[in-house]
Length: 341
Length: 282
Ligand SMILES: Nc1ncnc2c1ncn2[C@@H]1O[C@H](COP(=O)(O)OP(=O)(O)OP(=O)(O)O)[C@@H](O)[C@H]1O
Ligand SMILES: [Mg+2]
Image (cartoon, rainbow over all chains, first blue to last red; front, side, top):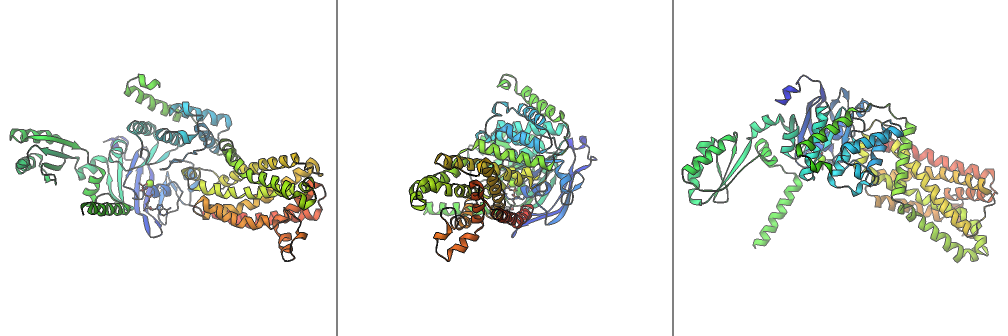
């Protein structure tokens, strides 16, 4: 809905076609097409190793693509890299500020590089530190900052001269809920002013909260694209989990829930548990009511947003995992066997 | 915190307003000149010396120990007395100090390129090599400070440069030019090798013979015949001869010319290689 309000006719901030980047035998990015409308937040959602950072690095002119091409704000990322650089800012996945300098020195440094004179750069740094609630820590070396403060400084550093397009690579990974909310507010404030944002994340709810459109990426490919409503429609808007008081009543509970939810209900390994992916969360209350009427005691239930794993399961048929994780799982399984022996 | 006393929604709105205000209230300045960006990166290097001064002390520790050790332990044996020896040795130890410190340029570049801040610099509309040039500018300050410390110690131990202040300054300019060229070599290691440790190891491997097979400690005439030409034509020896001559006030035009030629040659060979590698770095 908000997509319409923002006008699907606005010009494209990013237009990429067939981007490919290989590292040795790894196809980190494997044919990515993108169309991001100016003035919107575009979410790039994917697990570790999906190719999110590599894509951003190409769009920010840090890497030259092996194949394909992209226009950022109307400029080719390879032949007009300088023009692109003068209009975008990058807040990288790993702190793109200087740990050994103070917060203020970091911002003054960037201000000077961008063309402010000393006085202007200092004034600009102080304004930003105030707005990002960092004034108290301005004179401390960044290595003493908390994760949330560092992130805020990192984003402030990208706004020394406000860019037309901001790249944010996993801006909230590792932050506590409060800091995460702060970052979300900052992103909303920027978009409210017309800045375009390309944001990568591993969290579905973050993409859901902030992004007008979302691309789900896996193994260097975009496997689904759309608004969060569209994606959820293809995945189901959540999953309901029910625990019964009595395992014997489970078959009965399954048929009652199936009839009332209108979707398949799965039996879990736990003999008293059932789960179902639901399209319409409102039907859950009714279904639970029917269970009560049938005299089936429910000891616990929950209705959750689909997790990234569930999105992946629904879209790809496999859970969101990188090869390294497979190894981990295998190792863990081995350990379990040893324990059992 | 002031925000703790107001309701959450108001605090949220305040954040949004503050961020929007700070983004609306500025106009894009004209792009910075190359000179200005290089200068700014030089300033960054100076700030690092200020915030992490122990690094400077680490690198001057050895030269200080060497100066004391050689002057008092071997000075008598080598030149008759410690105060005679220091007249010969002081200019050489200053060269050794600076030549050894040049390798930290490579180590610093290696640390820098693997950090997120480097990505930010490279995504900005500035002349890319200004990061490198600025770092080298800061290093010149580091070389100067370290030389001043060692020279100060030498003077305290009885070194009296007959070349006077001008002679010492001229010697320093020559030495800095040579050091600048050398630092390009270590930057190649810094860009090509994976860890700061391997950059350091590699640099030391090259530096040791270069620094010790020289006329810094004793005159080549005292060495075995096969070694003499190696030592005499070692570029570091050629620079030491000129620096020593300038400080002692007895430099010949030829000595100075050769040292300048050596410095220019190092720069002409390695600067283009380094700059090409640097531009390709991803
Ligand atoms: N410089 C590089 N050299 C070699 N391989 C690389 C390099 N950069 C990325 N890769 C590989 O490319 C793949 C994609 O990496 P990328 O960093 O783009 O993923 P990501 O989606 O950002 O993951 P994460 O969520 O962990 O940040 C991974 O398999 C990674 O190991
Ligand atoms: Mg990443």
